[in-house]
Image (cartoon, rainbow, N blue to C red):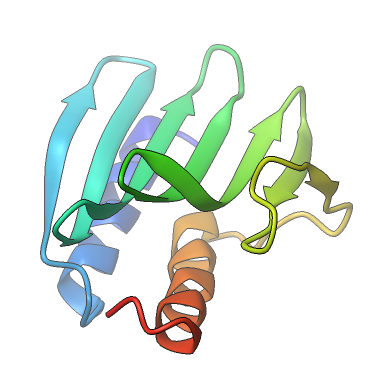
Length: 117
């Protein structure tokens, strides 16, 4: 994924997702993007992409702790499950062509199931 593609997806998700309040902490360079999708007080999705390294990280954060996440490192995707976010579960199936949109759908499920919104 390229920075410009992720930026477009970021704005699309912000405008189409009922629980996303706004984008904050947006930092873009020629080959990297970092942003937050604010959900509530101390609750947000952190996104990081580096074209140079190929690293792509998405995490649901509350109170400075990861609740859930998906990362691509060295070409391989893994997940940090909600029930134990410190662990890595390999996800050989990868993610959809719109990884942020897929992640936000997973986050919505978690938020509703666990009464976080």
